[in-house]
Image (cartoon, rainbow, N blue to C red; front, top):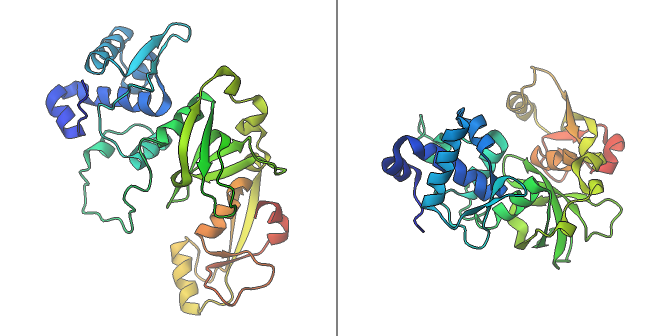
Length: 297
């Protein structure tokens, strides 16, 4: 059956099973596998109930998954999968980060709500799962990447490792096998990756040296000392103190951040990280301990 439902229609059609069917579809689509234990943990289902639900899903979407006896789990059929539930990539990434939540599928806010500057089709929902499945199963992908810092847009081999959100964009940390630089662990923006191909052969599986526990910058927690920028007026300083949870007359704030994310933090918080105070642009903060953090900027 090729039909894809909005969540409200799925509830109308399948009643109390709708949430569980949506969970199976979400887990299969974005991680590539679904097991009975997933359903037991998510819904406190007994093994027999989990098996019946997986059978129901399979009856609805016969070409979506196959049971892998060697791994003892249901795995996605990449070439024939069609979703049972409509879901945009941003919603999926949010649930991969914070857990499955049917309320994210209903689009029924408790209070009136507006989001500023939402970019339609910023993330391609057909491309994002290729990255998240590789991340979950520790496999590589091949993709082209539109980098702001490089003219090299040729295909590169990446091992996706973890999701990152800066509040505006979704990114992922990956080991770049194609890099000739000294340090191969880097941050990538989901929206800039294109022509993504999964590399599922066993010889393309992530090596131990490519995993996150070998990423020194990710595992290094650094103190970041910020001072309200000296070019700000007293009125702006007072407003920024409120925005960032600072006390009245407090001029400095100390954060602890992963080394791999300090550059992103500085961009997001409008931090002047130049060696001399920059008077030509607007900044909220001045990075006081730049010399200690130069390897992360």
